[in-house]
Length: 336
Image 1 (cartoon, rainbow, N blue to C red):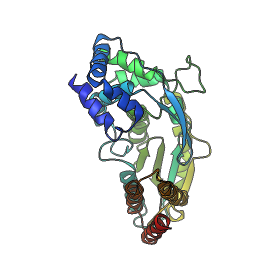
Image 2 (image 1 turned 30 degrees about the horizontal axis):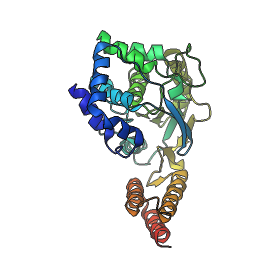
Image 3 (image 1 turned 90 degrees about the vertical axis):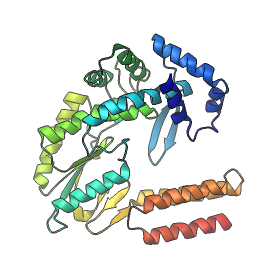
Image 4 (image 1 turned 135 degrees about the horizontal axis):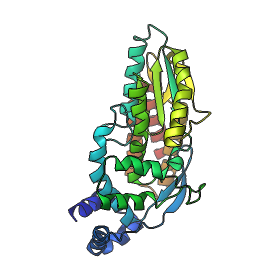
């Protein structure tokens, strides 16, 4: 029961103003005790998802679970994540404590500098992306990976319920594929699923310089032919072991001197810049929020928080002029 209440407190942070959260909170204890009875009695059933689409920057289909189900996801994550966390490699950066996008970019930059000996020799990066990763995750494979670490029958039945609660829209229920992007548990499941790829890279292929963030991964080497030879091997492993495919248009080998585009930043031998699309999107979004503020639908404090968030992103690159430009535009938009 304590874990259920803790999960509720974690879940509600920053969501108190949302209508579905307020409705659940009106009868909080009744709802949480009912949820606990269902979980402990083995009668818990996951409710249907509500679907919507976001464009940030590419179109993504998000499937949102009910409040009660998201509390369960938080409770499950808090117990299972510490069990699986020690099995993950150091250079897996997605949705892990003390990791994240900026740590991933920093790690890649260190690899590039080390392999190129501070740009004294030619260095290449092989970048790969998995096609429709979240929609393609095989339920049977994911469940088999979970059972390698979890033996408790009740927990495994709960995992079956959560995993089986969603099937990617392009598949029928028989195919048993897909995990929803919106679930907290999906972040853990993604790391568990692709840990097999990480272990294959490090222990079978003996790749020295490798980093992964969700379904984007990169390998650094001075040998372009070696990197080219890895593509087929990696593609075969993904197909045979994980029922996944490399994205045919997102497998590239680039010289360090050409710039390595990774997680919104472009790494170059002597500096780091923001990806052009990210830059344009940042200005566009801030302008939009400032315009909404003029109508009275957005507070000045909220727009200012967005500004500081963007400045935080910019602080991880060589962007002095860009930061000055963003600040100037912000003051102009807010006062015009």
